[in-house]
Image 1 (cartoon, rainbow, N blue to C red):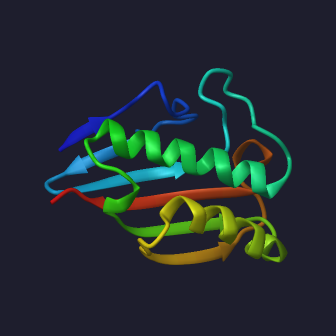
Image 2 (cartoon, rainbow, N blue to C red):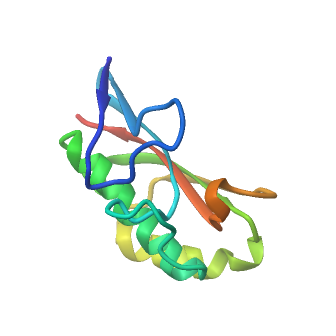
Amino acid sequence: MKIIATPEAPAAVGPYSQAILAGDYLFLSGQIPLVPETGLLVAEDVKSQTEQVMKNVRAVCEAAGGGLGKIVKCTVFLTDLGQFQTMNEVYAAHFGDHKPARSTIQVSALPRGASVEIEAIMYLK
């Protein structure tokens, strides 16, 4: 196993790693919409937050030698499923024709007051 860390994504806000490489799989911790340079939330709207989350996910994938096209599974956490369509439009734009398996779950709260968090599993072969 190998810990993956990059300054291009926010530093972990707790006792965890940005990602762990285990064999041919990369397990990405949930990314929230923090700007790596400031550690602050990008904005309050779900569109801007999802955009930043996807940038953070991409940065961690690239640090491990992959990219969004290698992701096989995502889990999306939203504080309001009423925002699903907005999140989904931004999410889809980043993945294009690649459509990883996905679950979307409504939660009561996320760290730092975020509205969206995405975790992923990437297959590197």
